[in-house]
Length: 296
Image (cartoon, rainbow, N blue to C red):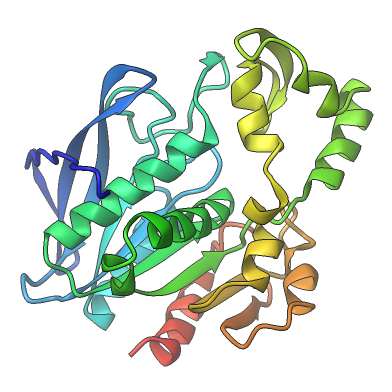
């Protein structure tokens, strides 16, 4: 049964970027039984564009990061609009800055995926005929999880999703996470499984040193079932999926080699030589050039 989601649109202000018009969008949402406003930027230069990308930032990131905003603006040259959301992490109307490490982390990875699905439903409501899901870093893992959940919940309108684009996606598996935990904290994920989910721990979390984290939140990010991890999901992906990796990536240096072993004709793997994890210094142009060849 398709859940009825009330989407309230507030047009707050307009900013000109080149020939594009960026509209700040807000949606009322619910998270952990508290009302939230989640927000996004909407890049469009024509009310006639029928294709939109939903472009999701990485770990603790935000919607105006260069890798998101520059890509979104350049997609307009291909007549592709963009909805670039801020994942809320449970913060009401979250600002355009990295999520603070100095907070009690109550958010969970499954709520992040559900927010992406809300923006997909918003794009459908706005009558876009063709929807591309784009994710950078951890956002790449998130959009595949969102895609698979959309297939189950909304099989009819899921056909509007034409392709996935992953930019330097996170590919760590549970074994690698356990090795890291052993080195940094002399512990493993299994030691948290039988503890109170509502208890808090001090641990390295989402690139925050010694963060205060609810156990259920920690496990939602680091104890993903195998079929919700990137590489197993890519093996079974049934839609055109473009994976861009960076040769100088120090955050996810193993992603290219892991994806290269996958035998799936739906995957197009491209290494951007000289680029870092964020594709700085005009390397986003290389991605746009490749996408213009891939996407009609």
